[in-house]
Length: 335
Image 1 (cartoon, rainbow, N blue to C red):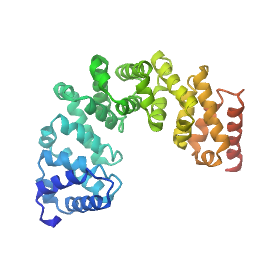
Image 2 (cartoon, helix red, strand yellow):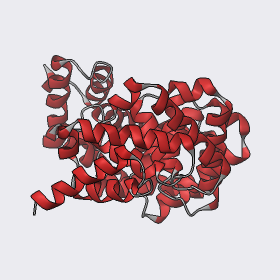
Image 3 (cartoon, helix red, strand yellow):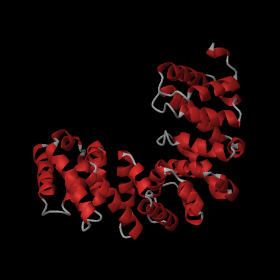
Image 4 (cartoon, rainbow, N blue to C red):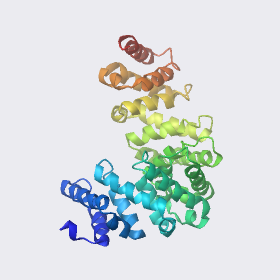
């Protein structure tokens, strides 16, 4: 049956199946359709701009499957090779395509297609201005996957400029959007627009306790890591202290951090060693390292080095001293 679907049918079916990405049958059907896109160049070529945008968005729901990855790369190749196709994407299509391509940041076609779309954002102020709050948040998050490319950096700065200049846009971000935007902006900490936009978002965290409370463990860890890129700004410092206060007051939140989250949070908190909340949160995290050998063991070499560097900011506290000793023990025992 799937073989009988025409190009529009394939695009529509993929788009529909993507609404239930966690079900086995939908995943398997999407993979089978993705396989057709890989095996049938004529089918791939027949998709119109809307079909390409929809298919990319759909395939991104299963980024770890070979057929979906290969089909997405083939579609990305069309964006690179066909300027007219790239130009035909409307603002929603550009935002969705960037978000989709970011699921495969290490593939050349996806990187090149994302850069081409980012170039449109730089060259077309009207397109940039047409992004709604969700589109801005998603685009920033996507562009951050390629922080060292000029087009992605310039497009991100242009979007950050909108956050600085449009308080209503800034205010419209939901908790996930704030967390994602902070994490994205932190990839370009030395640019004025990204710094100013991050400070404005940090100000929301300080002023809106409900927003701060809405962050899940991953959001708290990511936000702390992001805010630490601007440790000398008052808003970032105050927001980080407020997040650290949650770690102190909510044992369940503290316990939910995975090894990477613990390592990142310790590194971030160490940027403000003289504040009580950051010190107390770091001590609580250090206590986990002492009490949970499995967590300690899960740190990779970079995590061990970063954690030791962070813990050294509070040498006179028992938990930090004990955690540092436990990490030092790994250095002794694991040549």
